[in-house]
Image (tube, rainbow, N blue to C red):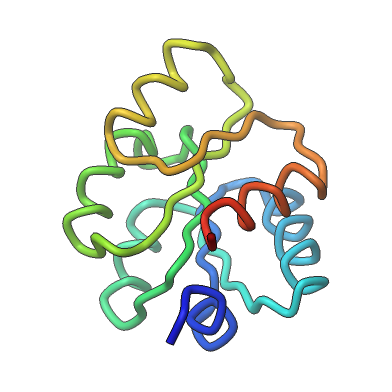
Length: 126
């Protein structure tokens, strides 16, 4: 099974405490026939990941119970094959560098466009 088939058969996980971001990402992914599940904290993500193995995760950096950048090494250890796209409103060169060093495969600042999301997903699938 290739990466795209895996994405089509397993939901994409969206970890973000902003409902509108979750909704927007979900709609963007649906237009490419990807299913998604949204959770709003790191603890919810941990619980969901105990039963599921997504191929792709969108991870916000600032969540109610911690920083996504600190959760990256845990995610990479739990699911070394999963691709992780860090999304954040705090898009600084320092944050970008730290996220990539800790295991993010892509780093996208908010606000983002549909084309930015599609391009990142396409890069990770190929």
